[in-house]
Image (cartoon, rainbow, N blue to C red; front, side, top):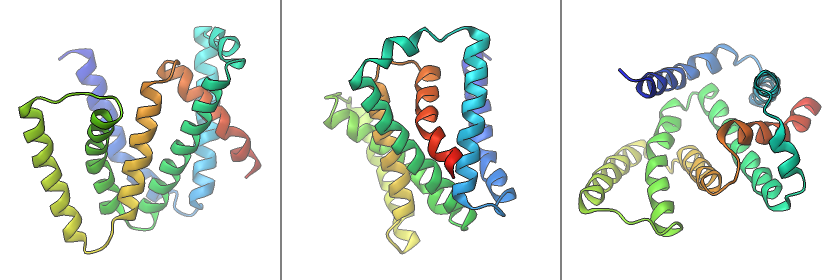
Length: 188
């Protein structure tokens, strides 16, 4: 098995076990959990960048208003997404939060086709239609408007679109986003 598949499996396993962690810390408020997530992420990312000696990008982007505005917006989208997910899990809305992550790829496809002008082949249209029908069925069985699922799907879809067009790599971008969130998190 190649390394990429192992990384993907590790990521999905971690992501799948995350609700158990959020449940275990439900004595804290969702905002408190988010604040800790941000503070500890910043500390870890700063340590990682220090070990790798990868700080050159800070000077490059510090005078670039477009990059700073883009990552200010993505940090806000990420904050809303993370907070919604933490709240949903701790409030017992695990099914609806899962639905959000089923809807998200469909939002990504929609944004790719409409905004980025990507074209899909017939087989891809069939796959998206079948996935859409499955998500529609799951949504209808909820019996209510899935605002949690829609919030998660839309915030992460728009976040992914903004990041796709941004000029920083994943590590640099996440560091900048969490740095934007850091002051409110520490203030909380």
